Every structure is written in C-alpha cells, then in structure tokens.
Length: 505
Image 1 (spheres, rainbow, N blue to C red):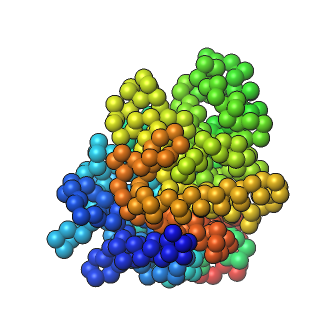
Image 2 (cartoon, helix red, strand yellow):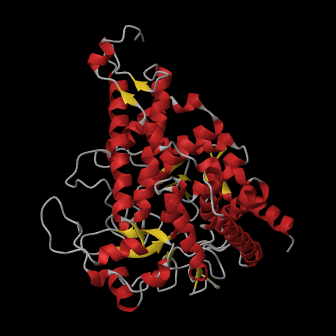
Image 3 (cartoon, rainbow, N blue to C red):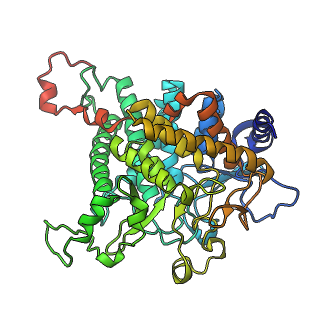
C-alpha cells in the first residue's frame, strides 16, 4: 500500500472514528475504535488519560488546540475531591446517560488505581501552555487550584524518606501483575516530569501576579495572600524534591558496565549512615545477561530498586522518558542510545517496540504474575511488542540531536533504525488492523487478546511519520522546564524584602 494512502487511512480513522464528543464537543479519543461486536464489560470505549497522551501531542502539532484544552478541563472537573484521594485524576471517563462517569480504580481489573494518569495530566498541561502560549488558561484559578491539589497529594509527609513514589503492581501502563510493585521506573520518571511541569506552571502564575521579578527572585507575598504563600511554598518544596529525586535516580537506577563492576564488589550487611550498599544488594541478584546487554558503552535506568531485590529489566517507556525529560545527562542519553543499538534485535524485532526485556519466565511468571494468562512470557506487558512506543524513542533521539552534540556514527545508526522502524510500521500496521500489541520473541504475532484499531497505535504511527518525514524539530514539543532554570530561582526572606526599597506590589 502506498505511503500517502496509509497516512490518509490513519488520519481518517483517527478524526472520524476515534475522537469522541461530550456535550457536542470533541474532548479526547476512545482507547479503541469500536468493532461490530464489542463486549459490554470492556472499557476500550472510554477516554483514558494515558492513551490520550499521544493523541494530545498529535492534536497540538496539528493545531487543534481547543480539543486539547477541553480534554484538560474535563479531566480537571473530574479531579477527586474525596478526602483520601483528593488531587488524583481519573484513569478514564465516559459519557453515560448524559453524565460523566470516571474510573479512579473502582472499576479496574484488580481494583488498582492508575497513578500515571495524574502525573501525565500535569505534563500535558505544561506542554499545552508551552505550545499555545495560552498564559490566560495557565493562570485560571481553577487550573492553579488543580495544581495545588495535585501537589498537596504528592508532597505530603509519609513514613518513607525516599523521594520516589511508592505504588502497587498495575498502577501505570503495565496494568497487570508483573512484579513491578514498589518504586517502578516509569512512575519515578513521570513524577520527575510532573514536578517539573507543576513548578513551571506555578512560576508562570507567580510571575503574572508580580511575585517573580526580572532578577529571578520570588518575592514573599504581602497583604495575607495565603494562596500565593501556598504556591511559593509548593514551588520551593517541589524544586527541592526534584533535586533529590534526580540524584536518587542517577545513584540507584542508572547502571553501566563500570557501575555493575562496582556494585558486585560492595560489601553487604552494613548499618549506619555511611554505607556503600544502601539496599543490601547481593551479588547473586545481578543477572549474567547484563554483560552482553550493556556492552562497553551501554547504560540504562533499571526497572525498580527495592531492598535486596533490584529489578534489572529494561523498561522502554521509562528510559525514553528519562531522556526526554533530561532526568539523565546528555552523556547518559548517548549511552542509552548505544545500548538500544547494541540490542536492536531484542528490542525492535519484527514489530517495534518491546515494552520490557527480558520476560518473566517459568516459575517467575507463575509466582509473580499470579498465573496471569494475558502476561504469558513474550506476551502483552511481559516483553510483548507495542507499536504505541516507537514515537517516544523517536522524540528522545531527535530531541537529543536538537539540544546536544551527537557522534556522527551513532547519529547515522539511529537514523537508519528510525527509518527501518517507520517502514515496518508502514507495511505491517494497516495489514494487522492497527492492533494493540504483538506477541512472541520477535513480535510477529498479533497479541492473543489485542484490540484492533487501537487509537494509540494509529496516532503513534502518525507521530513517527510526522517526526521523521514532516518536521523533526517538533520533537521539542515535549520540552519541560529545566531543573537548572528552576534551581536558579531565589526565594527572598521577609528580612530581605524589607530591605528592598523598590519592592512594590
């Protein structure tokens, strides 16, 4: 099938079949385009925040700003106000009998709340404001109140001093048991992006109110402005949290050949403040496949860090987002891309891109997934292949080229990899009816329980096409406020304010 024909088919499916209306206006896309026979208990006809991430990015690129704004506002209306969950956003919502019905986990398999939806909303809100320059929307009281509710939820005291967010199995894209409970990578990187975004939006509002001057100084409010006082407190707290979180990720999640050598030689059973092996990791927990996987130049963020049980699996989305949000340094990003090139056959196969590697197999599959038939080895989230993921890798690599220098050899190899990926998607996805995921060691089979005409498969393909064939510079659309720019803010004390004769609100 000709390339232009496939592009037109994908656009038609998206605009005419996937986009959904509420109160007569488009607000987002269904998870999958309904077929002739759809079971009434399936939720693929709902609007998921997670599934709408590529949708909103694509609509922004296409200039459909009003749909993105309505989506963000609809989610904001559904932000929980219940005492225990105040501040979270729903996993999904649907128009039922003239009213919105939201799912906060009470209707999900296993009744697990999707944490990533709340984190993604904050990131999408910042991307929308950055792309449209809609400062008026960013400073609306209801938007700022939603940000404050979210931060109240995230930045509250807890029993744990770790800067990571502790979540149960199934709380993000990997929504079935896969031994990812605790501190899974994807949630920590999304937390990093969400805090960057929230801080950026708070900074915009404080500047609009006159509490941020041209010297990058945040001025404490006068006249008992308690709302601004809370914003400044949250901004300062969020920045401090971001610094701790990034240091934690780079110390405990980032591995390369040199780091593994050091980890294997660290002592165990240590007590006290100054220890080398904080999580008491035994040498036997470090898998032998890491030698070939890492090579000499490769590096990546491991899937999870837990006491005595690090998860060395490679999770694609968390690593791509780590590069996109600059949670890892430019040099580490190049090490990540080298690792992907080295392991191209394992990660890309005959349908890009594998969600994680390697799979849980044999006894591990039985014990750690609860005999989940959907997560058999090489299936679904247990090392299945997801065509909704390559656009994240494309953004990570293209954005890196725009911001940092890259060695010519790696740049050329990545270009070839991206072009080959696009060609595979171009040829196979229309034939396979835009399936949700693919199974098998090489991703050649349509997933056993995969939904056809999956929206983020369709839009993911359109995004890859846009970034590779139309405008690679649009990879900057995912840029968030830099941690360096946030750390440059100076929070003035009341004594300093009194000394400023020119300070006038």
